[in-house]
Length: 341
Image (cartoon, rainbow, N blue to C red):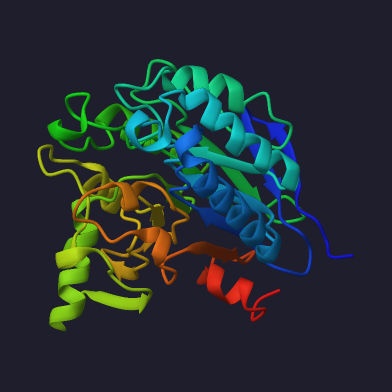
């Protein structure tokens, strides 16, 4: 039997002891989009079945879901009950028995949905395998929480930072996407300082939903062949090289992370057909592979993802005791074909 990671509560957070003799593996899932209603029953089954296949094939120590677990739009799912949809997803995750946590996306709490994120968080925190924490209620967002990864003998390796990238600047889709707020960045910096040894800065990886504009800046440098950015894997599948970053609101997250010197990489979702991973500004920027069978097929002008396959899957992050990490795509097509078992 392979060595197991150990999870415990200490210092007011989840502390993870790495397994001996192998890297610690995170599986990123994103944009599951469970509808939870009569109209989405078939697509919900497809999505939950895909989640099960990907989690089992990943052999992950921890699963991190970067938002949009549900899609509570009545005209497409047949219900606006986002708690009902959340319970379908939560029951699926709990049945798999792998420790997991998440950040909220913009669709988890739509303006027409029945429940706010706080109520969804209360439900998820009742699940035996879910390590999610609401975080400081004084902060913007719900679910800003941190985990500390240590070696098997207790040496700090890395901070895993879950950040709520919020939803919309004005409460609805048409107001434009929101961003990570300055008080959340203050919290991030505080956590890093408190967990860093004197004279050093502990490295960190961040997980959130909506990509920052710097991700597109890095990609533009990559495809123009300009210095300063490096392509690693994946592709930009969205129409017209689309990146769904906030257009109406300037965010300071990346600028302040560059100055802090802790953030070695971040993982986002939101744009279901993008699976890109690049190096830019001294950090690895990665889109997770999506699951979605419902949302894009419901939106006019979008490619129906129910008929697409290349973008669907998970993303693994293998972290070594020295803090180095390796990112790989875990396509659902490879799992279903038997290429990955």
